[in-house]
Length: 310
Ligand SMILES: [Zn+2]
Image (cartoon, rainbow, N blue to C red):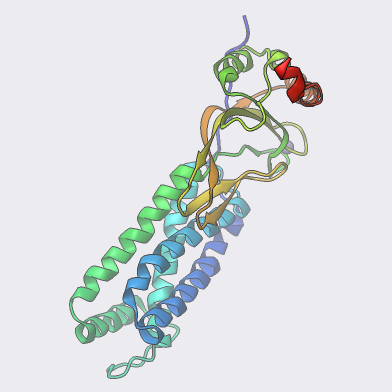
């Protein structure tokens, strides 16, 4: 009887680099203010905000993940909270910078780069009385769009990566390989039963298959943190624009903004960060090599068109 599976559990700790949220949030806020000035003052085309505001939300989610990695925020909930705080800093900085940069005529006060919340509120009230009361509706909608994008993106794409509490570093992907989609449930059962060697006998992902399973092994430098994950992957054709994750061997999955492409890969977690021992890691590395060997042999031995006719 195999031991009950143990999963990675993040600890609620923060590193000192959490302070990066302030300059990162402020810099993105100022960049957004510059874009807002271009939209309202130069192009005078407010509908452009439909494009600019979601880009701001997407950039904030990516930047928040960058800060969370460096500040070593382990739990997904903590990472989401950090992203909400970073975006609040960014929004505050963007209003302040907008008041300074837009050089609005007819204001009774002079905006500066260091304004108290009270002075900023006063400035926004004056701007609203000049531009019309609908300004407040738009600003509230802007906050709602940015914050809901943050919550959506952090939940959808912020994958939990193990962090080693001994060598104090994120674990890296050291082994990864793909199986045929129909092997997913069997692979899950074998992994949970502690029989990783069985994966070597399974069918590799057929070339060009739109659905498959992907196995990843995470290990830290000192070797104390060792975990395996299994996800179902699905190629989706005709994708629209959006923010997606990118998985590279030896790195944390990262976010990028996709302007729309012919195909993307969506992942569904099956097994997340199952604790494994060194023997299991070696068995999974051997399975990767065996599957790669078999796949090469299949490609070489593929019957030509004449064989098929005969
Ligand atoms: Zn370690």
